[in-house]
Length: 141
Image (cartoon, rainbow, N blue to C red):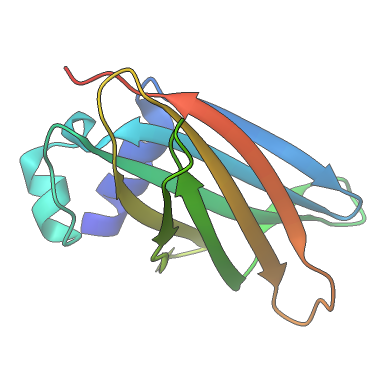
């Protein structure tokens, strides 16, 4: 139940979001401040909720023959760097709730700092990496 609340929070809150197409697969991402989560949702999912801590959420989606996207399992790894090229590796956790599968990691940021994400996803059973690169600036509330 707590994961459902987290999933709902990650997709319903105002966040930076995007996706990249890789043929049969798509990688979707969103970025938000951890303070956007309720204290209960953060605690239930063992996430730190604090100013200066952001959450990056990654989903690997596969398009079936009917054109419908469905989440798939896999591996996600990545790093985030700030505007002076300080690099931190992201520790992604897989969360599965019903048919939903997503990968989340937390990172530290300074308000107004441009953060660049380099993420590599690989769906289970797929031999090719799906790399995405995106940047976002979060502001402490």
